[in-house]
Length: 97
Image (cartoon, rainbow, N blue to C red):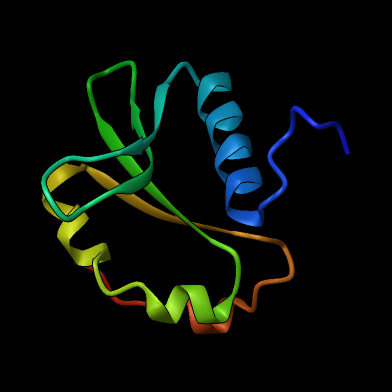
């Protein structure tokens, strides 16, 4: 792997998420701090002004340890989890209104 590419799973996910958003005409920022005590992995601004937040999780333990994600909801119109392909989706099912 190139020394210029991120080597941590979460960093690779965030980089891929940014590329995906860019292909849809969105602008992104990494590790944005909307307020003290919160840091989102990726925040994106859509062409119509919509805001999306994406939290990148490298595994089940990382997902379960995240206790702050609900604090991100007031800061966005859309919230997403980004996980590696091997992540077991049955652990990510959540009900959101």
